[in-house]
Length: 178
Image (cartoon, rainbow, N blue to C red; front, side, top):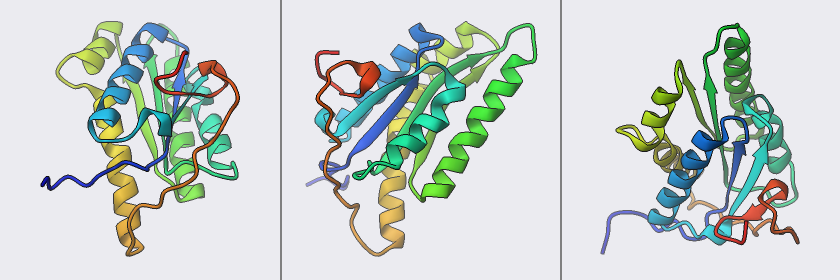
């Protein structure tokens, strides 16, 4: 017997940005790997792709506004500092927006957006010593459990969101053909 709760039946959405795609794809992969390790079925994970980190909060809000919202949303992105103040606007807007969606919906919306000075720092946080995708996965599961415990119940299991499409851009299940 293990002391780790069984997380089968949890439904999650991952909203990942397309900007800095090489980095975000690795972040997404490490997130999915950790969710699988935690016992979350890939068929219970909806993956959506947003253009960039700025758009992550709106997509997270839209997913949570569906008839059968997931138990939590994980937002993944990579904002790398450049020569202009654009970094500051995007990073702050993504962070504030993700927080607002979580507070407005009462659902965990996890900030898995890397904000770094260089691509090398971002890659270190994906595959190096930090593995932020795995952190985001654990945070999502932990928050679902924690919020359920504050209500004196087990994490609820919601009906899986269904789409008839296999294109990850439009909302495929993890582990599918996308």
